[in-house]
Length: 515
Image 1 (cartoon, rainbow, N blue to C red):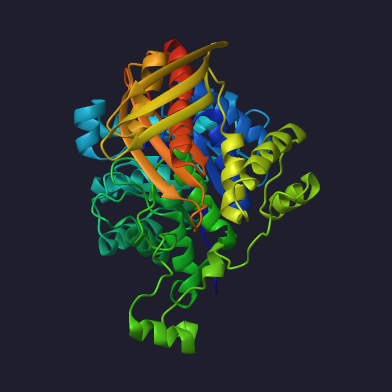
Image 2 (image 1 turned 30 degrees about the horizontal axis):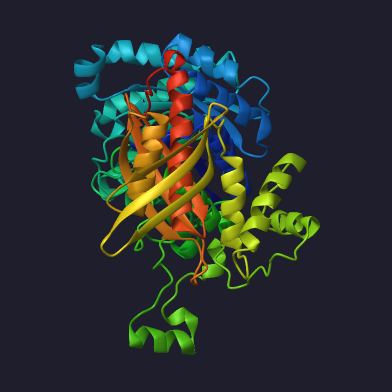
């Protein structure tokens, strides 16, 4: 009999722990709404105790995003549990997820606790969380390097204390599929009343086995998988949501398990997370990579033309990659624009529609046709705006063979107009050096990535940059048919985010999470 496996998405919590992948509150809400369209069971919206920004993100997602259970992480400390509960007030389906290590290497060297002390703390915090919500999850961190008998004791105790889900984390990506499957089977056979709780798994990818380990756990009886869009996360990342979901869907005959995920939303979710975090998906990435449904070999192409199933075990349409085109152009009206966005799954306010439509009309003057990807870029750009301390008013560049690249940039800085001309190694470098001089930024450019949103010579170019200053790292995005303009927009978007982050510096705590 086919059973249901819950998908617990932790893109907004563990995924955000990827170096440079930090998101602001508006970006988190935008991703959470896409996760709701994806129909995941649980969204781990953040770690409420870690910073005011995370608290606000959990609070807003809990109140604004309908459908999934909304969860906040909390260390096994009363103040963490209290913060999670306060952030989740008003959420229709709240969950508190608390954790403490179970491995001796963590307890001895990091927490300076005995096994008995850790067990007592775990039980106390589960009971404390149950005083706020009915849905409590507990994680014995570094479970795969823990003594199995002690792990069984902890799992049994927290279930007795009221945990409805017990998560078994492979915190450092240490285990193997065979070994992890045996751990899950051991827990299910040795823990008294194990069926009263859902056994969950959270695997990291340090040895490239996160998905394989998660699938082995499902085969052994796990009922929930914790994963992220594009597999982003701490160090080498987490188990990839799209790979797990499509693995279960494609091999339902073997796993006898399924999810409730709307797989047609996978591609859109992948693009959104990639754009917001600035983490480009590698072309050969399973499911969502640019080459995932590309066929080069003549033998493969011949078979595919005769019968697609010869070399495609999934249809591109099953993850939302359609061949249909939205023929939108400069003569399209506001009503048609809104309708097309609705078809794509976006629900915008009148103010957001107006801002996006203005951008659409400007782009339509530059392109003959606009495609789904163009519209998604417009909407995500409008939705992830931050207060603009710096804004681009005008810009021109000159460059060529045997000519010194020169840029003239006109910015609005704190309400006043500043205009300056500068030079660089190329047109983008000249623009960036000039902007840096006008804004007096001390930031360091860590990465600069360019990609085409659609095909053709009139395609929009999308630029992602990553800046760092005083320990704060931000990602900026820009899109335009002129790649130099897109580059300037991305740089200014990042500078505005950085200014906002540094202003909040005094109120911001360090991220501390389940690895």
